[in-house]
Image (cartoon, rainbow, N blue to C red):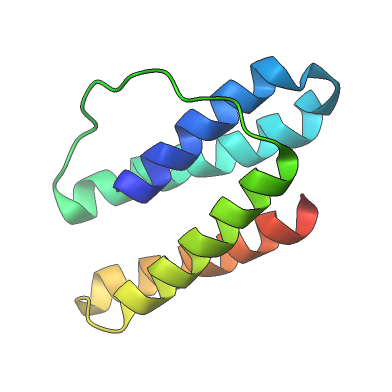
Amino acid sequence: MAREQALVDAYTAALQAHPQDAPRLAHLLGDHSAHLARLGPVVGASASPRPPARALSLRALASRERAAAAAHGAAALTASRELASLLASLAACEASHAAVL
């Protein structure tokens, strides 16, 4: 859940720093917001207050997406059946985001 929250925060900051890329970034932010909503009931956690994220370049966002894809994939290997399926889906989604960026 923390990985997805960090991505939501990064995209929120990037939208402010890169308004010319708003349509693409807003779509990806929407995906991560949906991921958070789906993860909450499965992992039984909620987001806690955080400081504002620093705006990242699109290259840095792509790097974070690749890292999240790898981490979700690795976590799926040892997760429960329900969570493993969700994490595998998230890993695929993050990998596609990196390609879009």
